[in-house]
Structures are given as structure tokens and as C-alpha cells.
Length: 301
Image: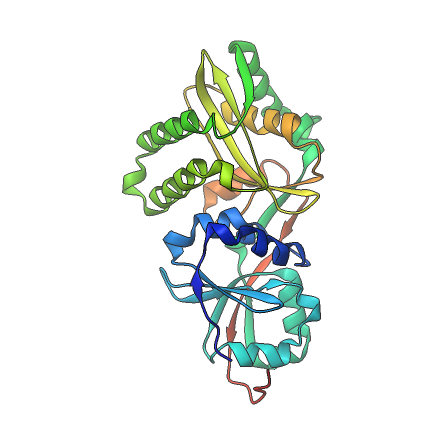
């Protein structure tokens, strides 16, 4: 079976989301905004079957991502060797799918290893919106410093407020010298792509903090499921003490009440990022794995 890979198009988002909604364990990687937004950087393409969407990257290395759809209906022992050549590497495999493969008949055709840097961090939305108790004392103190010092306003992020968010993002890149760091420059391009297409992307939520009519922080988020919200981007002007803690807490309080769980994506094995994510007391992780496929004698469809 030959998979017909094609460019990832904005016009296909509703069709893709139908597959994602049927996925037993969606992770942040597979939200439409993430796949479409990062398609240029990773040279992502997808191939459509009646029951699955296959995704592959061609940069910086060639690899597949986990297929999207209802995994529970697939005979993986037959489907995998029919679609994947020996030696194929698959990344960002959510734990539920990795367990199916590792414990089923397909296990004989693959090697599966942990992919710790791509684990999603999961948080209780109510806890982060209230910041109650000693465990969040430092966070709450920083929020209070911001809210007491500055006459701020919270505003939803929309197509109309996207331009000042883009201006803040450009300033942030100057402060952080994005041009000297490939990952920051790539992220900057993705953020610009998403902000400019705001009205054309479904399931997005966002918020911003304004001080003296200047945007000092913004958040871009997306509904991953009925009860989980993923935070894609969160940027702020570091000259305002407590602003990062403030946008985190205020956005969740103002806009995320419908969600029980907040997904703040991966740490990419960055020690500083891991420490920051752990400091918000995750309630769990959506673990992910990497698999390498070996030759198999089963070649059925």
C-alpha cells in the first residue's frame, strides 16, 4: 500500500478535526493549529485513508508522526507493515497507542523507546486559575505584584487584537535575539502565521493584558477536546514583573472555565523549561514514545 502524501492545507481543517475527535488520546502535537502552523518548519505532509490520517516530516530528519484516527478499530499487525517500510522511525506516539503496539501482535515488528522531551504537561485548570495554598504561594505573590502595581485590562485575543499581539511578539524576539536561535526564529514564524490567520482557524482561544493601551502579554490556546485546552504560545514583556504569572492565571480565569485540564505542551528536554513547567505542579503527563519499525512477514492490507 502506497500512502499519497500531500501538503497540509487550511481548507482541510474540518475534515482533519473529525479524525482527531475520534482519536482516543489526542496530544498537543496533533491539534490542527500545531500541525498546520509547523508544517513549513518540519516540511509536514499528510496522507488520508478512510480511517486514518498519516503525518510525516521531512526536516530536519525524515520521520513519521503517529497516525490520527480511532486507533481501537485498526488491525495494526496488518496495517503497519502495509504502510511503513522497514527502518521507518515514528515520533510523538501517545502512550495509549504505544501500549497497543507494544502489547499486541504488532510488537514483534518494532522497537519502542521513551520520548521524555515530548511528554505533554497536564494541569488542573481550577488550581491554576485560583493559585490557592502554599504550593502556589510564589506564583500568587507575583500575580498580586502585577495587579497591584499596574492598571491593567484583560481583553480577548481576536483578529482585531492580533496586530498588537504580533507587535509584542516582534519586540519579544528582539529582546530574546530570536535570529540567533533556530528554534525561537521558527516559533516566531509560526506565531505570525497563526495570528494572521486567526479568523480562519477554528477552536482557538486567546487573551491579552493591556497596560496604558499597550499589550504587555498574550496567550494563544486551542481546544484539544471537550475538556482539555492546550496552551500553544504565551509571551510577555519582561519589564513588567509578574506579567507571565498574571497572563497565565487571568486568562484561565476569564476564558477557560469550560475546560477541566490544561495542556502546556512539552519541555523538549530543556532544563529551564522543564523546571518552569514543573513549578506549576502538573497533575500528570501525556507520555509519548518513539518507534522504529523492522521487517515483517505480514503484508496484508
